[in-house]
Image 1 (cartoon, helix red, strand yellow):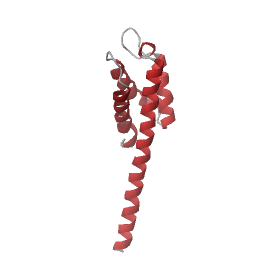
Image 2 (cartoon, helix red, strand yellow):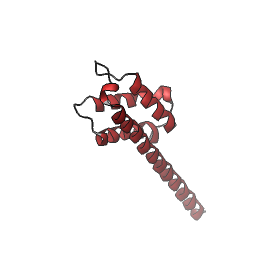
Image 3 (cartoon, helix red, strand yellow):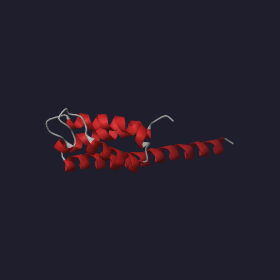
Image 4 (cartoon, one colour):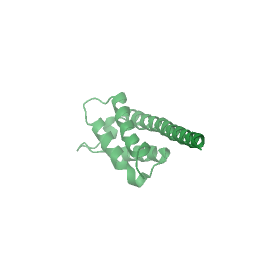
Length: 114
């Protein structure tokens, strides 16, 4: 009986780790898609004169969230805030943008309590 419980616990632990690893891979691709897209489109095309994200930036985020499998209508606000923070500086770092966007996505997707 103890052996069976240990086997079940080990299988469950491996499933959780595997699910998190898959989520982290998805998050990395998501962050790359958003930040590379922002770099390609260019900062002036993503923010308005008030420093707020415009429709082009929102479409970029919405498309990436949909590909990630998230609830687009409910979850874009956190990503919009992160992207706006990254675009607010004088220079936009693709690396820093990717890290910030990945952290936001990890919190929103991988470790979200349902």
